[in-house]
Length: 288
Length: 157
Image (cartoon, rainbow over all chains, first blue to last red; front, side, top):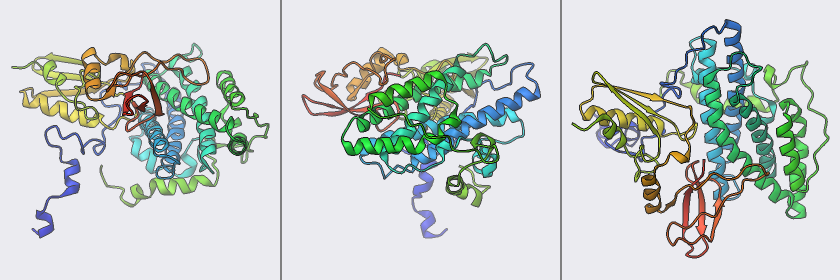
């Protein structure tokens, strides 16, 4: 045994759990986030329903995964430490939602894949996230505006999933439970973003101009979200409170009729996936 | 022999070591049948990184207490709420300098409205929110205007 091996191994100590050692070990051991949850598909679910469920969970999971990654890129770049912790926490919430949703998508598709395979070993055209979450924020105003639009849209969407609509003949109880947890988180995210958009919009001339420019920049990507009336009314209320103007920019055109949900992405997407997937692809057999 | 419920309930929370998972309402159910123990826990937040640690702690403590057949289940529904933090848990939070959660804020307007969070050190209601998110997603960062003490507050959730 070499000298270095006989010494205390700092890395081993991160995963070598000792009695009540709560300072280091957590977060280093990943387990199935749905362990112990009854994940059997409801009786009578036919293959096309299961495929639709898998598609739905994949799309919502990809939105959270890619946007979480973009928010993580703000860490060490936020204007204040308090904002940095806020953004890191929001990113962590979305990463948790992504893990649950991708795990559920993998179960529903029934091809033996898991959350890691879906996150790290799919190519760009297999991702189903909306294009809004792909772009890096130009500045803090754009971050606040994008987070506002994203969380208002997602919150309204998840509230509907929780409500188990009468139009859905076979609602998935696991997806409904994931949505119910996410609703609480998204309420805080939306609240945080709204407070900043109002503060910037109704602030100085300079912050107002930045906030308006941010809204103008991302508005062409909003059409793809298909906002429901509640989310649209909420955004209008915040924009008015912030003394900003709702942009009337035309939507970003689909490519050959296809958008993010169809697997057609902007050029920003390849760069995100390169960063997100490179370690896993370089070491495909590594375990956590 | 200590019961499985007592053993499971004694596991400290990794984020709040002063509180047990029973105090926080994370421990939802403990069942014993024919020597087998099934423990049900619920995550506070979707991305809670402590779940694997809690499951490992539960297993180790129960096995040490003589339970050989231990299963840990996760339950997502109904979702965890700060309303499940016990009165004992709230007292322990305050003693640790963390303001416990109050009533959930009113919804409806563009921004949530909240009641004042009293300072856990001097009790003054004159406190200011520095950040809606703190060291963990479940806490906000505050400062007392009276005694100047910065403190964390477990958010209503």
